[in-house]
Image (cartoon, helix red, strand yellow):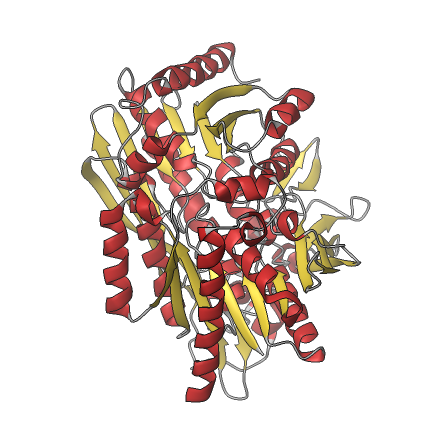
Length: 288
Length: 297
């Protein structure tokens, strides 16, 4: 069972929910938490564990070998991303722009652009009892999150069996990294806050999930601030609300120290249980 | 003309509320650019009139002309993104997986694959309720945010600022450190980093600052919710000193941020007390710093 935790707006509590829910579920059963917010991975600040595995992650880029190059210009012509540029006497490669499509490399008549690996980030896997935690972080200056997200998902698919619950902490927003993080999951939990920004970005991410044909439910964080518009919207659109986590300065303080909240704030555990019940019902019914 | 870019690494630190306050304070003397195109919110506070709108096309996507396709399979062999599948004996492109590299169309013996331009969103030129020009955009649902729409928004804002002799462009950037952020940083004269004293706030702040450093842009910092964790606030202040980042101001943890937003107002409009004073001083400081930077050159 794969569940993504996403939100349009940043800072609504994705990581808080992911880490607390993962730890809560791990009290009873095996759980994998995967931090796919590779640009700014935060879950690891809330989860302790022994490092079980570590790996550099690479993307493939072309490398120019001058010797047999005839400067025919095909590589530049076939690159749709301007990552290969031909100058008067040489070929220049811009690795940040490369999408690893292999077109320049394989269409080169003299094979002078072999693909070589370039490090784009690091994957780490920690273990703490029932809880497995996998995070990847993108190297600074590397612009594309999607290849690292997809390799992280592959790692998890290869190392954990299908019946284990997997929680994917997705990046904020609604564009390519979010799509990559959510497209293979069975259910998406959308975290929002009851404010105009929260509602506005929630609507966009709901539209995105509709386009991806995903099942989804909503968790309202900081419940009590703002207004009722998010509640009204969910009601009108018939979107299930799985939990409401109260607005509470103490939660913000615990969060600021990197602490989990569900053991310390009364009521939060019950909210997590409500989410668990919902997930289990879907799991038992099958995902169809 | 000076370009001030506000970013935060982590979302939810108050970046947009602060940027909108600067826009309000700068009035007609600035052009505002909302470069957080995939979750653009600033219009909710500045109420722009969407006077001019235009579609934005960026990149291409493969499309198979079924009447020409002879199912040779070269396309499937070369696609590194598994974007071509055989369904009901027909070759089909999954648009969400297609990267637009065009390799498939180049190796198709019957030229059955056409690369079509993609509409990825809309961008707007507006007047806000305080009279400043605002350039903003809306990325299409599930569209790719390659940073090109961000660049478009910024370049338009720049053009307007130059044509109308404005002193500043104020840019609201997006969270993270990837393409949209890189795109909003390019060409900036000064970066305002908004952070909060939480372990994740500090972690993300340091990562995004490394990126700013790569661009060699002068940076200042606003610590929001500073009293939430005084110890971490101090740690941030020490980091600022060490890295020679200007500490512009510290704001308290204050739900006025949310109240103002719920009212559709910027903080400086809604609040008559402390927050307004601090934010006004902050904006003046930003103006002053960018001016002194100019004199140095």
